[in-house]
Image 1 (tube, one colour):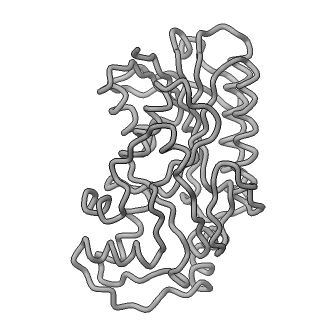
Image 2 (tube, one colour; image 1 turned 135 degrees about the vertical axis):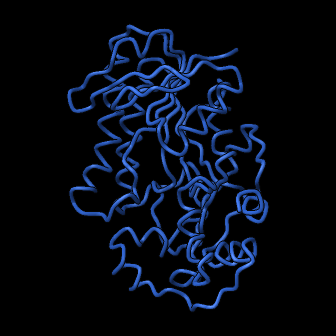
Length: 300
């Protein structure tokens, strides 16, 4: 049955493509953001600081897809930006809970973005699944607090699904564009040791997982949104070079250089994490892109 879906944070890379997919599947879609925007779908406004959502935004809504949150890699991690990364997620999730708590709606499902950052980024070979203990670095603390706010919505009798997103590969922006740029300029090289894991996912599969979570009422709780075959930083760099027909001349970029250039955020790419896709596959999601080579061939 088609749903009427309200998407927060819909102006981002994921939100734009997910909107197109859901519309193609005959769902009705609306957007909720900081400003009303003209487009193919109705748009409504919320003010997170003032704790206000336009009441019309929830009229007829069956499902909320909650993507809102400041970009983790948009700026260097100053204390001010780290505060924004945390509060843009926790405060928006809390506002949804408080609004839904009032009961003037017919929302049955909340599908919330989360991140594999909850497991922390280390050089460990451990394979992380949805039952793994959270890490203790900055992003792990952010994601844990984020999910705690989202989990409150379950107390209202609403089905909650948390999609823990890995490194998203898309030709329209995000991580792939940044990683491919030096390779295209003939200065590509692995980062740090190159042995650190990269738990990636093609954006088509990520949007497919969100769409499945909308329609499959059996899905509940956390699901890792990563491809079944994790790779390493060296392997992904070499695969990009092959796909782009570029050589790799430069030596590995040392970890200390990355820390100088981007600061604390460098720990994400210096360390990495090896994350399992088993649970989402067991839920019945069939990946279009299981192998990195297939994904890069499609995107590059």
